[in-house]
Length: 434
Ligand SMILES: [Zn+2]
Image (cartoon, rainbow, N blue to C red):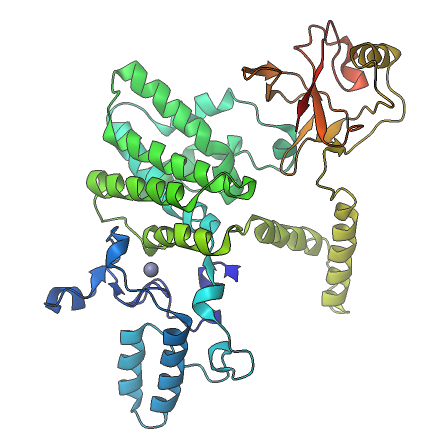
């Protein structure tokens, strides 16, 4: 079960991150303004700013459901005020007919619920705050958002991202920059943050070298935050371990606390501490990017529907379904050409045949999927490993005849064949496992 903060809160009858008990998984974690920690001589309670996971007392399915049943029983005998205090202390609300109280489903809130790392980091989250704080320090050193904008403008993103408007190049407008500086928070969409974060880290690295600030701790906090994002992006590829993720998150949070203090620390900083445990339990944690994109899809279609008096929902649902079915045509995870062209140039074909004499058939296209997660389009530069493990920029062409292989061409020298999709000239291609 995954969703944004509000969805998880409503589903599990939890009172939310702004409540006195901000985390639905921890019994003893209290919000920053709670006075329980001050009066707790036994040392049971900890503040939400604690990064020592050993100190957290975790809920289980049984304890959460017990709270729900206890609240139900007490609701008939307690006063209104009494119930209010009780719910506040426990962090859960009594909602009749909620999922927690269903005797048939035997819903397991702790086992099934997973925090969404996208919402935790990228939607008004940990990353946005960290960038805001780092840039506040950077500004004092003469490095501004304006400088960052000029640096970002020199970068090119893969075509598939450019078309979806998910690169964040146009974000840096003076009015926005003024708001970011005032609120000490960088505001952008989750997709934009995902495209921008490596470039931001590169920018700060370049600036710190220019200013001779190799050891600047504020910049180091942002690098560590980017490091956590790198780990999270490796989860679907199976190369991120819970231990590695835990180490990255704890190092980041410790340094954040040391450098920026607890003033801007939100419950999302605590939530990310649960991610390694969730990864260990579920083997994979899926972010909400796809679900969020679906919001956009609905809004895009609904924007054109002006007559809402007759079957608005049905008409919208039909349009969304047909769009989805259309999109499913490309839903094949094997490497392949996605957008083939019927006729390609003779030169290109001759070149390909010369490079792959044993090829049974050759396909040329404008867009190719080269593994389960990535695709590329004409004009993209890809970082490829060719033959021995050495890396470099190469123009890419794909051949899916072997199903599991992707073929990389050496750097092209002319642009004359651009019309015929992939550039050709003096290329010696070799096969490389996908
Ligand atoms: Zn917690």
